[in-house]
Structure formats: structure tokens, C-alpha cells
Length: 457
Ligand code: ADP
Ligand code: ADP
Ligand code: MG
Image: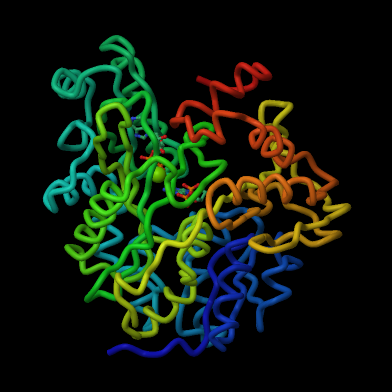
């Protein structure tokens, strides 16, 4: 019993709320911006057909407040919810509550979210579908003794990871048994405090890995991939600069990797947009699944630019009961795309958060240029949320052209009123190792540390 989307509630904020409203408007779907008190003058609120006040600025009183969101559905008559990323986007209980209220959750089923949102369980699901995972503990661990025992077969160095973790948080390194005994209880406490779930597991630490992820799209019957993204340039395990396709995969490797992701998605009867994240060990040529994100991702635009498919529109169509409408052979990889995340953080002061008033704002333009943002001149960036201000995205016929366009884009952009990461991207784009694509997940931090003493090992 599928129903069409008659009115969409956007349960998020910032650039992704704007992005979702844009997609809905293109499909002729009326929108409601569900906002906190800090966001009533936001670009999303300006664009939406209606604004609904969820509660005060604090996320637990607004964007994480399930009762308030259900109240918003009821009050506005919206019959669908797009959760964006972060907040409640991977919360199975929320998805279930939306369905119970008779509305559409734009995403996979609560069962799928539950199964893949728990990282330890997702590893087991991947293994069952024949997708290799990083060697690690088969189950969640609850005490130091079992962790030390499990570590003997996992091997050091290893990572202690929160099953419910995300956004680069809840991950700690242990080089040996002594460190594991020390860090294990800390990880449990941290996971409990941050995610409301103290379960952790162990994974061997792969030192020179690349982070390569596959975008999938499914309608519950069929799944396709939109090729891969390379997201190895990270700070504190958070992505800063992303690209598609990965500059290091052969056509053969690409096909094998993407086919494994589609197999996994089809084994789940996957509905909506999702991402399977892998680590790639360049030394051995091996891929290991690390997690699945059952939502739209921050870096989705690079996949859109190389395929011409609008992922957010596709999510809305699928949620409204439409079939995919295309097959794998309809999806062609065209050129190369890059994304630079502009964050309200000061690269000269160890990325100290720097929200503020947008004074001068000039966005880049030209062929192959896209800006996803919620900023406007005179807008005051509130201090309560994620530091993402904008994504500067470029597309070129090949990687060299995309890099050249990225340089132009950085020079054309002006954003004054708050410290931000624009200058960091300018410097990054001058690095020969970036142009050679010679990097792994530790490279950016090593470079930052050598350059300013500002990075972190
Ligand atoms: P992506 O995987 O799309 O690049 P990130 O991992 O950077 O996205 O996460 C996007 C946003 O979602 C960030 O604001 C991040 O802090 C938040 N986030 C992701 N997973 C979780 C989680 N499990 N709990 C809380 N916040 C999360
Ligand atoms: P999150 O849910 O926070 O996104 P992930 O499991 O995706 O957590 O890991 C985030 C990042 O941490 C990866 O992109 C990678 O850089 C690093 N990482 C995760 N697992 C490993 C591992 N086993 N070995 C080396 N690095 C890892
Ligand atoms: Mg991840």
C-alpha cells in the first residue's frame, strides 16, 4: 500500500535541508521546514512552503525530538519525512514511529536501518553476503577480559569502535594489550554517553588504507550503484575533501567492488539511497567493508555529477512508490568530480569552531561548478550545530580538469565574517601529492601536523 508524497516534512537543517527542499520543489511536492528556534530565519525556512517550530535550539529539544516531529506531521498534514543526514536519519525507532503515524519515511525500512545502523551487526550481514570485512571481533564486547582475548586473534594495532558510532566519533586506537585495557572502558563510557549504547567491538587498524565507498540506490526489488567515491582525506576521521571516481581503481576493481555493494544491497531488499564504506589496502589490493550508511551522505553530489542522477529526487520518487526506472547499464560514468567542505572552523587555530555573521559572500560560477549551501549575506550561523557552511563541488572531463576548476572556484569564493576552511582547500590544491592521488586516510593529518603543528595523529 504505497501512497504518493503529498507534502514533505524536512526533519533537518543547514545545507541538506535546502538540498531536500530543492529536490521536492523540482518534483512539485510542497514542503514543510521543521525548524528549531535558532533556525526560523534559515534559508530552508525561507524556501519551504510552511515552517513548523519544533522547539528550542538544543538538538535534543528539536531535531532529535521524536514527539515534536510527530506533532509536526499531525499539525501540518505532511505525509512524508525526509531525515537528511545525522540527527534521526539512522534511528530505526524514529522511522518506525513515522510509519506508525501513517506517514512515509524517506529511507529504508526500520528493520534495515536497525540491521545496518549497528556496525557490529552490519559486519556480520556483510560477511553473510560474501563481502569481506576488516579482521575483527565477531561480536560486541562488554568487558576488558573478553576484549583482551578477542584481541589475540584480531592482532595489534587495533581500533575499538562503538557499534552505534558515526560522524567519526567513538573510535579509539590501541597499539598493545596495555593500551587496550586502558582504552576499552573509556570507549564504552564514551559510546554510552554519545550514542546511548555502550556496545563496542574491535577491528584491526589498517594503517595506510584508503576510504572508498559505493553509492547504491534501490527500490526494494532492484538495486544499482552509482560508482564509488574516494574519501581518504580526513581529519579526526571526518571527511574534508571527496572525489568520484576513486583515482586509483582499475576498471576491473571498480566493477568487482561496485558489484559486491549491489549484491549486499539486494540481499537486504534495499529501498532508498545508501552507502557502503570500505577500506582499500593499496599494498595488497584488498577491500574490506567497514559500515553502511542507510541515508543520504554529505558527499553525495560528486556521485550526482559523474552520473547525472539526482539522488535526492530519486529517494523521494522511490519513497512515493515508484520503481527505479533505470537499470545499471543506463548509468554511465562521466568525467571526475571533487567536493570541498567549507566548515566554520579556523585551520590556523587547530580547527577551532568559529560561527558568526556572514558579511561578504561571493560564490563561484562557471561550467562544472556547483555550490550546496544554506548561507546568505547577513545570515548568522548559529553555534549549536554542525560546522558545515557549504560544499564547493566541481565536475570536469577528467580529474586534471576538475582539479583546475577547483583552484578557480577557491579563488572566486569570498566568505568573510567567520574563520573557515576555504584557505585550507586553497593550500591543499597546491600539493603535488594531491595531484598524484598519492594519499591514504592518515595523509591529511600528517600534512597538517608538519605544516602548522596543528594536526593530530
Ligand atoms: P557522511 O558519512 O555523509 O560523510 P558524516 O559521517 O560526516 O557524513 O556525518 C554527517 C553528519 O551526521 C555529521 O554531522 C555527523 O556528526 C552526523 N552523524 C553521523 N552519524 C552519526 C551518529 N551515529 N550519531 C550522531 N551523529 C551522527
Ligand atoms: P563512522 O561511523 O564514524 O563514519 P567508520 O567506521 O566509517 O566510522 O570509520 C571512520 C573512519 O575511520 C574511516 O573512514 C577510516 O579513516 C577510519 N577507520 C575506520 N576503521 C578503520 C580500520 N579498521 N583501520 C583503519 N582506519 C579505520
Ligand atoms: Mg563512516
